[in-house]
Length: 130
Figure 1 (cartoon, rainbow, N blue to C red):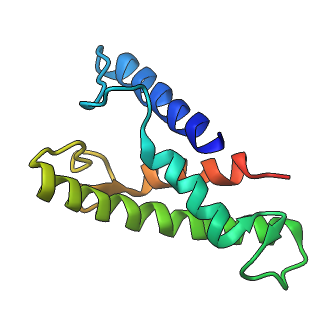
Figure 2 (cartoon, rainbow, N blue to C red):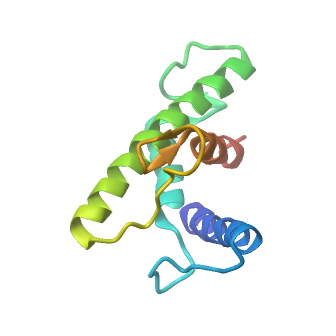
């Protein structure tokens, strides 16, 4: 359920951003209002790392803010690599460029940007708090 909710929220937030900055809404050729990448991120982070309060990796860390920092940094790496891999695969298989961050400051390839990754990496920390 969490993956579906987060996928829907990702769709809503992205389209609000598009409406405010570009003046249009884009369904990205989807048949439903979900962006699966956001939901998959939550599931992956939970399956691999657990929650910030109960880390599976780096479990020895006792200081709360350090656990959240470690979780955020892991999420940052997963989002960054995930966007690059997903962008390359989708473009190669579907011949569609769903996103291009080349015009955004601090972009890493055309598929990701540090600013976008920071925003996306915070979501698992926010949603998986206990």
